Image (cartoon, rainbow, N blue to C red; front, side):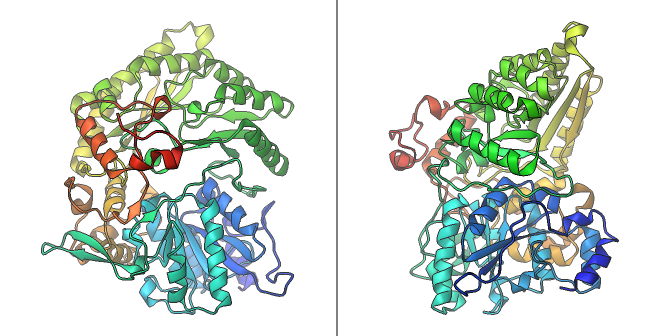
Length: 622
């Protein structure tokens, strides 16, 4: 790497600290171990810009897990912004790691975090800049092993022709197993194929080259056939059962620039017991595993000591459901009172009783409050199994207003199964009641004017949810319902509206449920100029339209089609542990608007015959 040339380029680009490394607590290692052996070089790549990737807790955990090994040096890389990418291409600078400025092509393994389907083209940007062929079939022995993990591995098929291996589930334990096997293969001087055969025997590791898709006479997906006898029939999701014993983030790297979540993130538990039928995370992170308060406090001490942050985010799918939340919040606030460390609860249930906690939190600093009713009417909330009422929401916002808050965000979705215009208008009616709740309070109690943001994203059907068979509504219908809601919200005091761009939601749905036919579509879109697609202002609609036409496909056949319950699914080789029969039953109950109890109140049998094995509860569904 020509450091002088890189330095001159960084003077010309926006936010150069995205590309420099050298941050506080960055891991620095000798490239040769004490025994004289060279360390394995692992490039942990986040397929979005630095400030987003550095906020991702999972990547920070994997970074620490791998760097705790004596035989491995894990370094970071992120997708460049447009100006930096252009400068790199003009000056023949390959994509590189931040720790040592090493070109990615010189690493042994390149690992990508797959968190969002709209980041897939950024994977191609990093590979292309490194001079690495995009398809695995074109990469010989001289190229790094390309792997990936993250929630999108639920359906790996749209990137299966690009990846050599994918890791399904929690990464804390499986990454060490992966590196142990890889190390043994290198010691035996095995070929890449022989190495992949060994890696395929690790529970949770999927090798796409050992499976081949078949299609029917109409070109529709039919089956994923094993082409290697020793490959597993199903790829079982990995679970870390004891989070208290699991490796955490270690010393947090402190960026030189502001990042999206510029604070200490403490994962207080993993999983969710609620069973919202649209929520993939709620199904693929089961069962619930909580950290002991002592573990959380120790991690808080360690993270604050090595960073100087003054805010702690208690992170989980639903922080208010943590068993000891009412003990933990005041304990943290009291413990760090002299340092004025604040606490944020980014994922509150609107039926969580947190009044006292909110009052304590706001004494230090008011952080954001976000509630997610998801739907505007009780009928639709029952359909999606949200399990909360209008009274829950109004009580929660009232408690927040009394505690001194005047800004709240309300998250909803448009296009949920069975949704009608009445449900859409119900969102506006809820917002109106929240406004009334605020302005009905005495002026001396309610503080400044209300700032209530109503956000409405578009429903995206996801694998391993009861709604995986449901179609996404058309773009035209999304825009019509957005306009209906926007007009209904006009004039409501203190309320503003934001909605997600529908074109990216369409593609997200297509890639969430697609099969291997989307691999060439992805590459075509990239070559036509698609990149950083999650940034709405830079979304290249024409590039994607061209890519689908070029490959004889349409977005609609993946995103907007209702899949039959008995139809083969592209992700059928993946085993997320939740029983397929359970998902079917939940789908049926949705159309009956029948709710399913929180599994903390009794086992619902979501793992079928494996309930006792996985979460220690009795078998048997309600």
